[in-house]
Amino acid sequence: GQQVMQIPQYQHVQEGEDFTTYCNSSTTLSNIQWYKQRPGGHPVFLIQLVKSGEVKKQKRLTFQFGEAKKNSSLHITATQTTDVGTYFCAGPYTNAGKSTFGDGTTLTVKP
Amino acid sequence: DTEVTQTPKHLVMGMTNKKSLKCEQHMGHRAMYWYKQKAKKPPELMFVYSYEKLSINESVPSRFSPECPNSSLLNLHLHALQPEDSALYLCASSQGGTGKHKAFFGQGTRLTVV
Image (tube, rainbow over all chains, first blue to last red; front, side):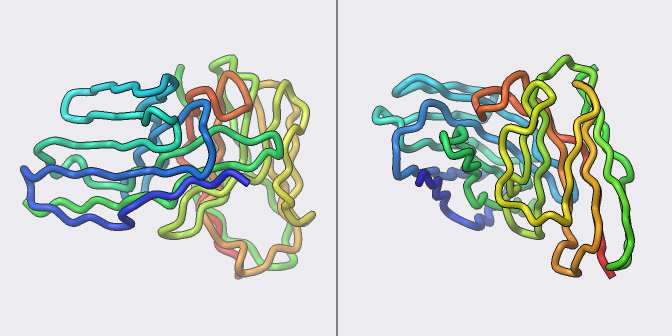
């Protein structure tokens, strides 16, 4: 079945450094979503990617969808303390109804 | 209104209790979800309702019983839970129920089973 693997599990950076999290699927995805969950909070939708090779930017965040639509990445430039949290990628449900959240990457930022 | 409201925010219940979690949205979304999230883990899908009908049940034990009274409300009835069921229970909604639409999550109910 479809699985979405996400690495790294944890990333500790100094404020101002860049950060990247990667998502890989064993199968082609029709779309991929990214969510952010702050400590003690709930997941908040960031973006959805649909097209092969798609790149979208939100201020310091850059999202990419691979050409084969099997991988995706989220890159944050010059991290700030407000970026702390866990970033999840999520694929669509399969016909079998399997949900596909990645395990998440937890980002901590040292001021 | 782009909120999903969950009540209660915290719940402590004994293993013989019956309780219900409630979720409400007024965005006109036709899909609503229950997720379970353990600490340091991703949300784990439990149920999906699409157009008020249960469309996905991820092999959840029968001690969890979902209900969708109307398109804006979603309940999760709990009975005879186990301590390992302690977790954050998240409700979400979206325009469609296939994982291809932006999902809005509620703040969650932090459940402790004693």
